[in-house]
Image (cartoon, rainbow, N blue to C red; front, side, top):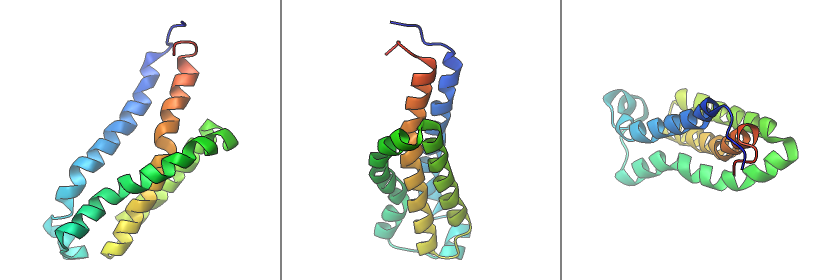
Length: 133
């Protein structure tokens, strides 16, 4: 067994976990804030639940494609593709003028997240922990 080198680099996946946890923790309350409902309207608890969870649903679907994409393009490029897809979804969500546009932005964000979330860990482990696992 080799030693894991540069353990500080493991902070990268931890930071992405933290960002994901932050989104999951705040999106529910944000969707009932006065400024949010004034812009996008009030909606049922079912629609609220779907809106909150659609990022995770699409991430779970696209994560099945992440390994093949990383094998085809290479891990770094696959990570970049996921980040670009995520950024596009985030921009769409941030500029949303109605609830469907907001939800589509979250679905696209989730697709990007599914592509880069697992690839980030694999990339870091293979780069810095060769022979350790």
